[in-house]
Image 1 (cartoon, rainbow, N blue to C red):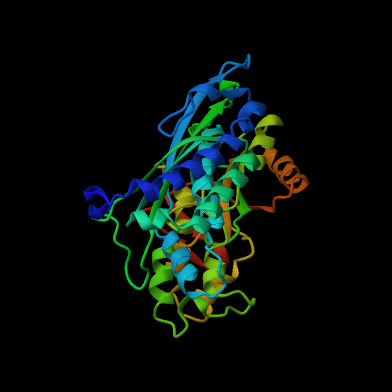
Image 2 (tube, rainbow, N blue to C red; image 1 turned 90 degrees about the vertical axis):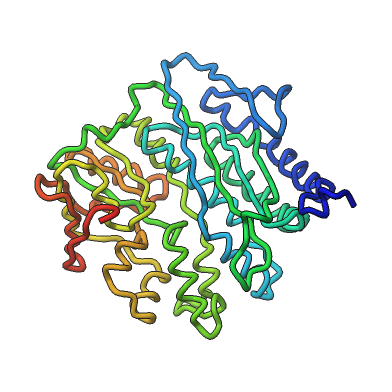
Length: 371
């Protein structure tokens, strides 16, 4: 064993993981062709990618980057303790890919290129073949589903920086970057068209997605069975937490294709329902109705006694994406969404006034993000 390997970086362990990811990436290269974006296969390698737009529309490019946060700690805990033999990293891969891909949509961009960044606490983390296979399969699944390629990525053992909190022994930090295309460029969405009178349409989430995980971990580790605690719906707390983020690409793509007038788009990440007040202007967001609340959230409120304001300012509370649009577009948006399998609800309106979210279903007012 080399001195570098003894110091914590063993390329003999890392190389099979890197090759598995490259092999997975090669399966995805044609996926963005439907958006007239083509990856140059002859210059593909682990550190970068060359791609081009061959369409005839005037266009813009969009770049987004997102980190998964602490959700992977839950996957590692479940892998080590659930007794199922599952790594849960096929689900983690879906989260990593969709966090950035969904963010692209907010500008009216559709994802075409995805790159991942993985940093683990040891070379041995990368040497787990089953985990690597599941991770690669999850990336390929989402890339095919949303129409983007995975031509490059980065993986590194950082034992001096990545130190998972006990009892988890090995863990990695995940992030991803997505390049999206806006074609034609008139489809760009800036949010500046948002105005009083616009309606707020919410699309259901699949569950927690990737926000509020630190709170879930803290509460779960105080329970006798931790993440193996059974919820009323029969799932364990860990299984419910690891339900992947939902993709909203097909929904927004359909709205753009039907030339729906959209004032703003907003991924429901960070600050829970309070994020609806994302715009800095003096608008009041009056929420009059709401979507079904996922089991994980009702458990935290009803069984663990989490205060209502903490619930609403931490969790997405059942809404994964928001569409702000003029009143005349609402019926068309709801109809298009239903046809392609999304559950949408017209939940409220934008008003002139103090910047806040008036959440009438729970008779509570929420301050904007960070307040």
